[in-house]
Amino acid sequence: MDFAWSDQQRELLDAVGRFASQQLNYNMIENDRDGVFNHDAWKKCGAFGIQGLLVPAEYGGLGMDPLTTVAALERLGYGCKDNGLVFSINAHMWTAITPLVYSGSKAQKKKYLPGLCDGTLIGGNAMSEPNSGSDAFSLATTAIKQGSKYVLNGSKIFVSNGPVADLLVVFATVDKARGPNGISAFLVEKDSPGMNVARKLEKMGLRTSPMAEIFFENCEVPEENLLGKEGSGTSQFTWAMTWERGCILASAVGSMQRLLERCIRYAKERKQFGQPIGKFQLVASKIVDMKLRVESARHMLYHCAYLRGQGKSAYLEAAMTKLHISDCWIKSCEDAIQIHGGYGYMTEYELERELRDAIGSKLYSGTSEMQRNIIASLLLAQRLRRPNR
Image (cartoon, rainbow, N blue to C red):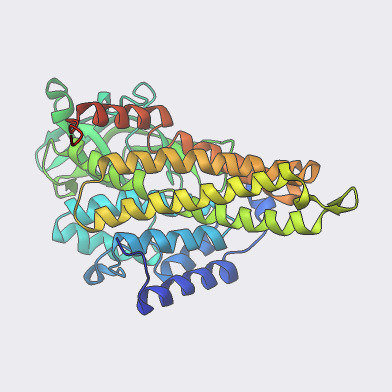
């Protein structure tokens, strides 16, 4: 594996870094307090090409490979402190755009992908239900075929981008008797009759990324908005989730790098007992640990993206990447607060928000416990090689 960047890649990554630091810095304390989703920043990202990084150029995207894409998202996370906005972009890319790119018809791609790339449309995914939890395929939302349309009934919860989404990928069963094989995916547009965004959900962190509970009551969806074939929803969701697990925390690696550099500066400037606090072994050890986490997280992220770029499934690697980066992000946020002492606990220093934003990474895209289950099941299913004698 060669992670050396070409001149073209380096130019793009540098441009993303400059764009994020210059165009995406605003009053995050107020935005976080009030739960404000920054539409203007979203549109700027779309105009730059962030949302369309992985989308083929013929549909309005930049046509980047997976490795370049995650590296660009890492730069975005480094330069932009609005973790909620960046999370919304990731949810949009991995749960709405990716299923369209790989399962959508040409007509669906032409209709929706250009707007999803340039920032004029916001996408989301509606899979989780109040009673399904980690057992995602036990969903109760139904889709009954009636003539040239499907009629959806049911409810979804924890829908990222739900309050602002123009297009949702909604999973529902066309036949409960078929279990997971009856699940299908549908493209449901905003304001479709029978779809009701019931309430905006308030969260501990990522407060600038809107989330909602959504109800479907006799919601009519044209048959041409069926994504893929009937009964292919389970495979589509699994495919999209593998992408999401492996890539959604790319921006967290950038955030961790930003925190590391901030802590190094503070450890040099802050003095106690007549010397910089970086001279104290306990503080220095925390900085070393933060550095190790960044490097290991970045390596796993790049390795997973490289495998996807080679056409390999990377199902195991995606689960390991998600598990490892989420743990590293939280621990680095905790260390950053500890290094800054009482100041780190204060809202104005913006470190406590970083921790609140990071904690959710152990829940979304499959909990850390689910990632461990996936990893363990795959490892135990492998045939062990005998050592050479």
